[in-house]
Length: 299
Image (cartoon, rainbow, N blue to C red):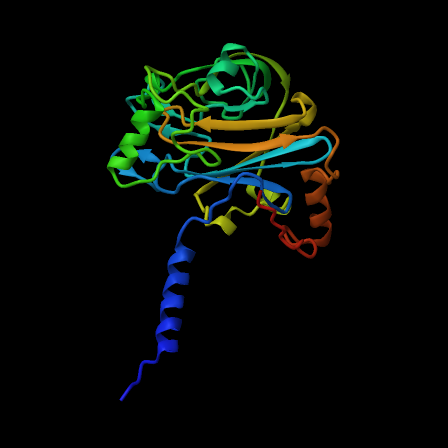
């Protein structure tokens, strides 16, 4: 005869709960730091790809930002490649990432846009941005391109679609309904650079380079098929607190992150090319030395 004690029931329950927790997205809140990277993790069930909600081509999992004394590194984890998504209903037959916006003004996005006080980064060379090349831009105004990409009219429409299918809409460090963005109205998703002055270049980074720099989305169970990264000189942007965000060109998912830049404040680290030169000297790629212990600070 098998006897079930209170302790055995408790242990079984605890194991079951831990198993369930392990399968859930591990939320990164504002100022979640790990190995010098600031992470914002989005809902894993709000990317809209046709009739599929969650896990499809337009699922954005997270964004992370790391800074050194003179360089900012950006990493995106998602299922959308830089080549975009083929869609015959889109004006160009392809839907890509919108541009990445930085807002240091303390105003909501609509107001900052009206004042031309946004900064923007075009990192997807094949998207619908109105600026000529990839790079960092100041005095930016934004435009809507969801209409020409068979997308959502506004954020409220997107939220309703996700909720109706049992998904959970979110925007990383911001709630899905945060008033920072205009929620209703016609074509109010501003997801592409309309005008701006180029002030810097970006350098694309491989997943291997990002890993050497300490990036680890997997610690939050954010394991999309694509990890996209780039860096730029911090002198292209001011010091201070910011909200950064990007949408898909169709507005089928979006993510925002809160952070701050301080010029010359962080410890310098070797540039990626130097890191890989050192590793190559040891004949090892990605395992050059002892891994630094992960430290987290949650604000």
